[in-house]
Length: 79
Image (cartoon, rainbow, N blue to C red; front, side):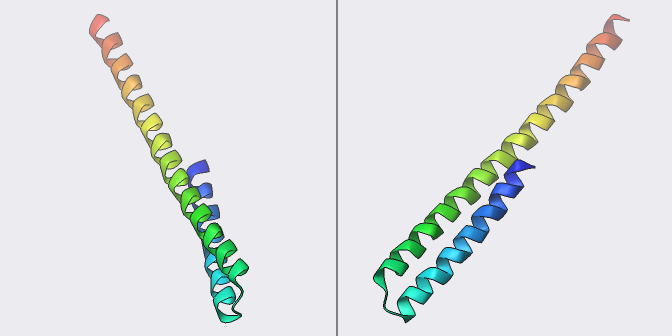
């Protein structure tokens, strides 16, 4: 779902940030180091958002399944 896609985007952004930060360290470019670190933080945040979205999607599916089961039980009781 959307949560998994967001996690993957976050992972990719974090990886790119890590590379940019390392290149900045090797070339002694502070700006690249800072930009890379910022991308890593953004990537981590996107991963966290994706995990939260995935958990919400799972919870919604569980609630739907439970409510359908409850509905069937109530119908069976009164029939």
